[in-house]
Length: 358
Image (cartoon, rainbow, N blue to C red; front, side, top):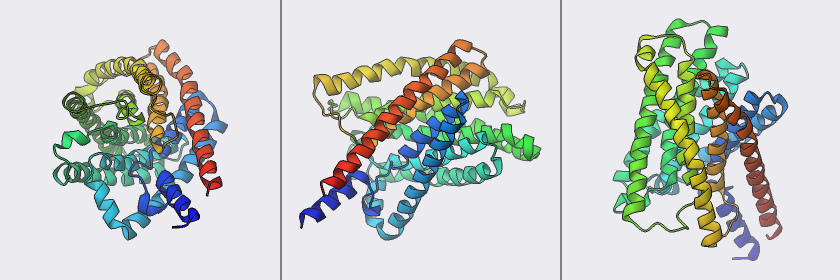
């Protein structure tokens, strides 16, 4: 193999620019860029929000194209990823990425288009929500399967809660432009159900990760960026709960409103506590054990939780009328934006180096 061919292979492997090497979690960059765009929207920064939104849309369309090609031409590698518990849960980023775009569209006043994307995201959830756990657990060659558990499993939770967020956001927006009481009631029901499912999945994933850490070797090389999704899953659960509290009264919502309100506050407190924990874990990984700090696509799994924490704090502060929490979210947005810019710059720099070294 020539030097050019070897470098092209490296480019495909490192960047997933080939459908044959596309990472299951490739839509994480869409999630991260989209949620920072929504944060800018809530902050009243329309130009920045619009730029990030269209970048997220471009990434979304790009990865959809590669995913379709992979599903048609590289079925064996796709099947291998589906049966690999260390990678398969990354496929849930497709659901979350779709719903982040849909949520941004709701904020831009394009509810009909958001409703279409919501339908796509809901269908993906129905297929992957059952298919991936069965394929990854029952079809895996890794035994015990718990050895393959990692932070990407929490994207399962994020995907479920993203359905709840879009459903509740549409239930709030549609009456303004497309009055349909029956549809609003159905969306409210979906939002409540998916919020509850997301919480149950979070407990399950936390137990699985706890078993992985306690029963099998867990070194600094294992504590990578996707573990930040542990906090991100809490943050999106808070957003889903906060949006539910803004909805008009319905029997099922009235029956759960107190639970939603109280649990959202508790989840926010726990998510806040987790942030210093992961910062310290990162210091332990990189400064004490000298694990190199290099760009990898997995870093986008850290950006999304940081951006989502800002959005969650803003929504919770407004829905519960707690200004200090909203203040934290308003200022935390800049943290998420700076980290997004650093990761994006590192991605571009790494890409340029890879091209230059060909």
